[in-house]
Image 1 (cartoon, rainbow, N blue to C red):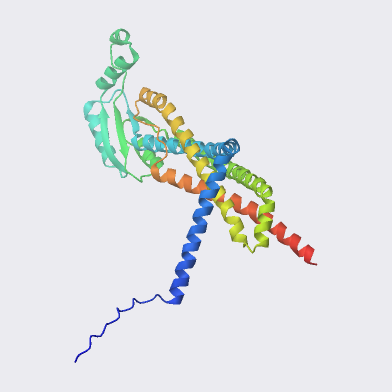
Image 2 (cartoon, helix red, strand yellow):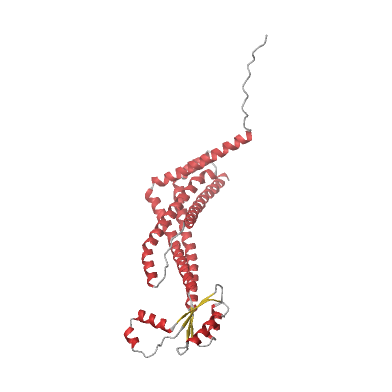
Amino acid sequence: MSRNRRRRPAASPRPAPGSARLGGRLQNWLQLHLFSLVSSLGRLWTRPFASGLTVGVMAIALALPLALGLLIGNLQKLSGAVEQSREIGVFLAVELEPEAIEVSLQAARDLSGVAEVGVRSPEQGLDEFRALAGFAEALALLESNPIPAVLEVVPEVGADPAALVAALQTLPGVELVQHDALWRQRLDGWLALGQRFAQALTVLLVLGALLVVGNTVRLDVQGRAEEIAVIHLLGGTAGFVRRPFLYLGVWYGLGAGMLALAVLAALVAGLSVPAAELAESYGSGFRLHGFSILDGSAVLAGAAGLGWLGAYLAVGHHLRQVESGRRVDEH
C-alpha cells in the first residue's frame, strides 16, 4: 500500500544578509535625499518674496558677465568673418595698357601665399563709382578715365599677410597696396582686453552671488538653530543637518540661472533686428546669436554648483561653531 506523500514547495532563495543591508541603506539614502529635495523646495514656496529677492540678485550677478561674454563672442565671430572675407587691394598705375595689366596679374598669381587673384578694370571701377557716388554727370565731363585697374588678391589660409603685401609692392606697375591689417590688430587687442575684463567681472560677481547665497542660507540656519540642536541631541549627523540646506542652495542657483538665461534671451531678441539691419547697411550677413542648448545647460549647472557651494560654506561654518561650543562646554 503506497502512501501519498505531500511535497513541500521549494523555498525561494533568500538574499544574502550583506546585500539586504546594502539595499536597505541605499533605499534609506535615496529616501532621505528625496525628502530633503522636496522639503527644501517647500521652504522656498513658503516665503516667495524673500526667495524671489535672493534669486533676482543672483540672476543679475550672473547675467552681467554672461551678457558681456556673449557680446565678446559675437564680436569675435564678426571679426573672424570680416577677416576671412578681407582681400588685398593692389592699385596699378593709371597709364598701364591692358597687356601690362595682364603681366602684373600673372605675376601676382605666381606669388606664394596667393589663393586667388581677380582684376577690376578701369571701366568697371568707373561704373561702380558712378553708381555709388551719384556724380554721373560730373564724371561724364572728364576726358579720360581717372580710375586705375585694381587687383583683388585673396591670401591663402595661414599665409603671412605682411610678407604678401611686401611681395605685392615689388610687382611691376603697382602704385599702392591696400591692406587693412592695422585695424584688425587693434580690434583683436580690444577683444583680448574685453575678455580679460569679462573674466575679472565674472570672478567679482560670482563671489557676490556666492556671498548672497551664503548669507541667505546662514539666516535660515540661524532661524532653525533650535531644531538643529534637537537633531544633534537625537544623534543626527552633520550630513543629515547639512543636506536640506545644500538642496536649498541648489534651488537658489537653478532659479537664478534660469532667470539669467531668460533675461539674456530677451536681450538678444530685442537687439537681433537692429543688429541685423546695421550689418546689412554695411553689406554683411551677420546675425546676433545667443547661447546654445549646451551653453545654457553649462550655465545652469554652474549656477546650481555655485548655490551648493555657498550653502555648504554657510552650514559648515555654523556646524563648526556648534562643535567648538560643545568642546568648550565639555571642558
